Image 1 (cartoon, rainbow, N blue to C red):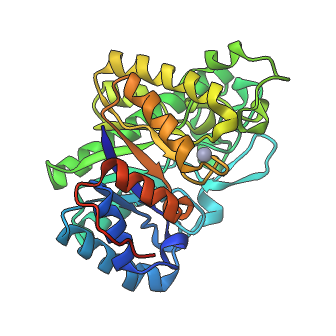
Image 2 (tube, rainbow, N blue to C red):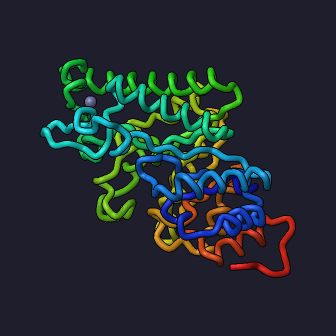
Length: 336
Ligand SMILES: [Zn+2]
């Protein structure tokens, strides 16, 4: 079992030196670096200067680059107000509408532009497509009601949901096709929200479940983000799955439940799965000992690799631990 990759969030990277970042990756035998590349959300200096140098140095040291893109966010459209998602109530959501053809074309065009500029080994899409009404108790609520959707989506709730699903699945197929047309070797993946299925919650009573502190505010991957990554894996729109299981030691029970769900999907889809362990976001203070426990649980289920999300949560202790567990050439001195 090895470290598949580590996500490098722009805000954390700004405070680091490139040399240190790449050294840490090399010493722990990290295979892939996922730098955050969405221009409109990045600090200018990071985008123009730090990131290109980071990628160059990573490649020079044998680390692959996958671009981590987030092109549905505010700032990614010139006509933000015109193309953002709208809730049923009429209030506006902080994300673009993935059904709107203008948004879709811009989204793909920007990814292709990034491919031209950086020649990555692959692309990793941010997990969220549909958030207007996504965080709900009632699944029928999930849909966008922007002008485009009002004019084009079916009026019936169930049909509207079906239209959403088909439309986002088609969109993923198109993203994959356009990437392949550009370069047949380009890989595609995305953040995979967990749980995949809503049945996950049936095991928990609301009082007991600590999942994200408030289980009612979270849902399965499709209803949370319009993200049917299992189907995308089955149809080969994505080349491997990165399930996001960001937990610390207070959530071992949830971690195991999700891992078992993930394991069943891995065995069924025959798609490579690299679970993302939380170093920071959503995981609280996930110390190296806990990460070690999680990695051992992954091993029991025969996962071949795991990823780390994200750079900002990794401390010198984490890197020391990973290096001792996975590094081939452990140096006598470790510089921090
Ligand atoms: Zn819409």
